[in-house]
Length: 526
Image (cartoon, rainbow, N blue to C red):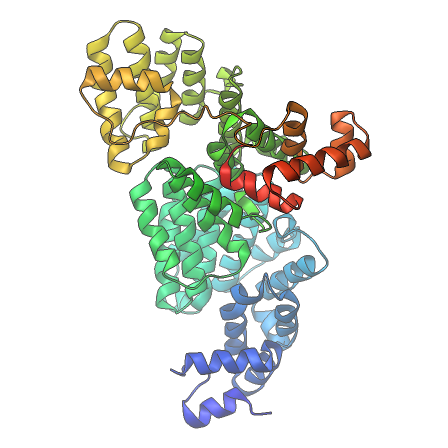
């Protein structure tokens, strides 16, 4: 077998310095990474061999973790003495191979002890702290995760140039993890980490890592309502080749949210359909929120609500109250209540964050408690708030002021909201108050709407002609519930359910549950 390191030494120089990157990648793919790692370690030492593993981590971690584990085991003992983080990587891969969820992996308390046991290299310090922040984050201990990420960032910022030179291609991976902890904890700093990760990944020729960082930054802007910036970063991500599904979900979710915000409901449905079957990882709550934004009518709301219940059972209710997860879940619940035209579970006692204030303010306005709506929304309508929050708060205040007879003030406030909505094309913000109210405000402000608000009042039974029972069956059919459970939930026999399902399929033109799910996803309603 021709060894790449021999061939590159003869023809191009060092295996890691060769300009023939494409040829090397093809050779590695053909001859298996473990063999190349072992050969590189024997000829050049463990450091270049470890660098090969780091470079190919994103490529194989989701598609072939066993190959990565074999590659790590091919490293000499010195690698594990000098780089204890390789033990963490091996433990993580073993966890994944036996069927464990990546988000449930813990780096272990012994690593905390190792980090304080004496002198260790900067690479290991960063690796240990990065593993710590990721583990704490997935356990829902967000404030501790932020502290670990801040400690890692401080260690990097205070390191010498010589120490920094030893970190190499791992830094973009680390910074993505630090940013994710800041993002999920709703702490500042995520933007900087994602931007730095993207720039470093591009400069070190790691397109998969750069695409991941750009996609996560695009989402961060999109969920804030900064749609123009989100569109720009989404373009950076899409300019790079797709990676594994595990990291593609956030790109599809970002595109879906942009389309919902700008009124392209069918297009949003197509993007959401692409997430089916993918591991959404830590974006599970974000996905539920986007699906609730996309949904039309009470039946579609039931589907999202069912998914919320299942996630609560799976992850624990405590996790659903914290940080970004809690914010997305509460927003999805408020959206479901609006679709059903039922009182929102706004929980005014929770109105500590701006998101909760807007949810509670919209609910108060719907209940004709206009003074309360103004009091809740006004603090969230300031310039320091992101566009999604600020626009919604201003619209609620404007609507409440108009109803109270303060038309001049209502017109001024609406004009502010409308200008920002038009700048970002954040048209979904109009839905926080009734469409008739938006039209009244536009008229008194003399601000014609370039895109008319699209109230989602579509019924659940369009041209299909489904009966109420058939609609109930279809609502549950497009969830992941087993058929036996659906029959039990509806208090009907399995045979009756089968007969009803056949009628539903015939009416909607589906041949399977997959077809039915796709039709509901694309249409957004039953």
